[in-house]
Length: 275
Length: 275
Image (spheres, rainbow over the protein chains, first blue to last red):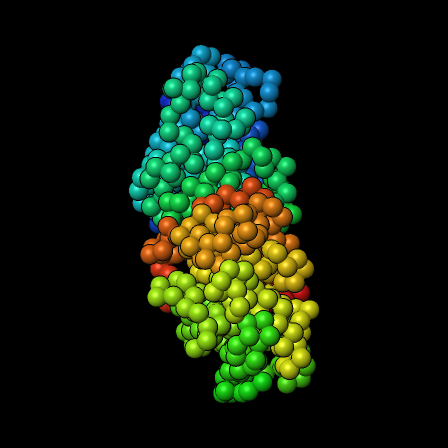
């Protein structure tokens, strides 16, 4: 593993690291914030899964999460959203291919060789963190934005017992019914019959999440019609899922929205992680 | 108007008053908490509409709202849930007749003579408060529990511009699709074609509420299947209504649930009332 950068940040260290991934067959880059407490032993970790077009860098530099993670003594991990590089297939559209991994394992050509973002994010990278850093893998929580909110919600519900809490900013909630989902699932998985259980609304209707859940979505989200918030809201209420759905007046889909409410989200996760 | 009792309470006064109502054609009793600040001039008011079987007294004595109303300098008004007395029709069921006015104006015999709880709560009682107490009718907010949550949500949406904020505890959200609603609407209004716009989910689908909204409902609510929370949640998200829906793990339908979260609700309303 190669250290690309390490910067002192709120008493801890914001690092960026590159490593060879078995899952994607490429080099992968991620950001990791370790609070000061990590010098004395393993700390809990909050995953932040980013949205379409993002790399490991967007949330790391724009979400403003480190100040609150430092206050609560929590690490933050910022994975990339897809494999990248010259040998990796891509598409002219912003919402397919590189920067648009959707946190699933592709089975269809040409995507299936490298686009294994579920395995990478859910299995390979956590193991790497546990091996190389002062991270307590028994205390993990997860959040994400848009496509990353989809990733956070689906991982939290599919990987039972893994995460103590889950939150999301403007998540894609019902991708099997949205152009943000059907297009990518079709490309990566082919026919609809092959689509796995990677839809947060369907997972909520099935088993829900065994822990607290928090979602913030802006009422002026310019992509609101693609998110499927109303389907997830109904499923959450019908399941009697412990949680909060907050519709924040006037906020849109941007990192300005995220940075406004990230304090609440980190505090929400800290309560679950330090219980 | 007759003063039934006045007690010093958190630096202010908790009063109970009886008056002749033109709307119901009966005597009506209500509770009113005035904070200390009311000695110096009109204060904002938060209405608390109670649920089935309740009188003016239940929320007044069991919700624990006065401590927070005093902190924020807000009055609390606790109306009764129906007309009462010997000449007032009733039903053996707990959910029809006295104690079950549903905050609507009945048109069908035998209910139509006295069961005018919409007019009483929305028109007559506010005017009475403004005339006799240091209440600023330009600053009103409303909350309620169960049937009273139905009342709070429907009044907030139907009486545009009246309330600055609305909240509810375990509200009946979709009465036209519930046994808590269809039975009473049928009795009070007759055929379904006569039912007015007194369904919070339908009102949300139509115009929503021009202000912040907060709902708390327990995941272990023993009447959860009667509330229609999922329909309201979907409507709220689809409308992009500014607001929060919180599903509180392990809480039921009782005043123990209400008293746990009343601090949040009073603070929520205070922010809107003192803006």
